[in-house]
Length: 433
Image 1 (cartoon, one colour):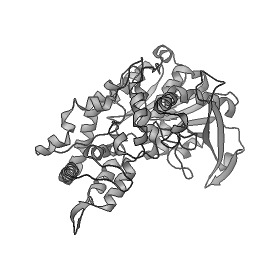
Image 2 (image 1 turned 60 degrees about the vertical axis):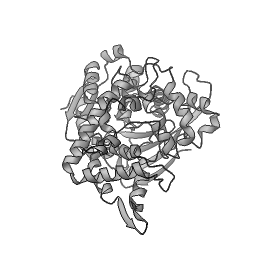
Image 3 (image 1 turned 90 degrees about the horizontal axis):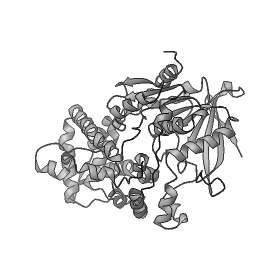
Image 4 (image 1 turned 30 degrees about the horizontal axis):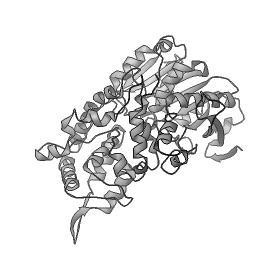
């Protein structure tokens, strides 16, 4: 049953949908999807075109906005918006350490999770679209991984799209995960270098924390084992507009003096466990590398293997000299399934996914080259999460795609830039700017 309610300036309606787990077996097992319909209060009774929002991730439910935050206010001027919790996320049928054992053992869990990539999400969207719009095409806004889904949409079901806009999410059409991470580590290093240039006092702070973690066994209050590699992974913050500042403020209160000596402060530990825990988004860890799985090649813990090609990220080696300890970024590693209590029960499942060889191609270059859907994309210069060169190559491969390449924003520009980013992209897609 749909339930409607109000926030300032908007009317929201809870929507629920049933879709096949495997769209190639439409009469088989089903899962539930949740979406939140949003419309401006003064347009609630109007027949408006639809805009579908595809959240970044993978593994995150759609934004829980209050009122007309970020880009939503701009969208509501022209559209009725659907904020979809992609399969396995948010209020849709969950996939986590508590629910996956219902599938059986690790082999059954891994087989289940092979259905949680962009191709399945797009087929979900097409099922939902036919119910929501009565068959009319809609506009899709894809942020980050949502952009990956949008490119799959353009490849497989362009007839469902009136317009497509992408922010920070044009993937390489053919690159293996190894290629993605070989391009990523130098970008991460540049972001860390820029952070230390802004906050030079953090160089010594980070060295001190890293040294403490190499010589002490630290377990956070939630049971997370804080290793030096886990600490380095806080560099994922550096891809956001406020991330460097957030990281700096976190580091400045790392230690406290006690009768037993100097230890990591409770405040530091509390904040770190919130940043590192995957309890709220375990799919991000489980299927992140699978997003790049194509051509029947295993991803095989790509980020971990490729990191070995960049010894400057070895904290112990950095501490043996006088150089800075480098943070890492948006990378998933097998040790995470040892450190994080939310992931530990899923370690064997993750190993099976890393070894999986059944990945099918996600994109159709020939169909993209013949694209007729109005499409525009924001490409953030030196985006830490999505390689700019890969994005530009893909932009050239999609017929008619218009780009906005900017260094005004980081990866979260559609949030940080508010209505301005979406307004520009819609204008580009519709040939109005």
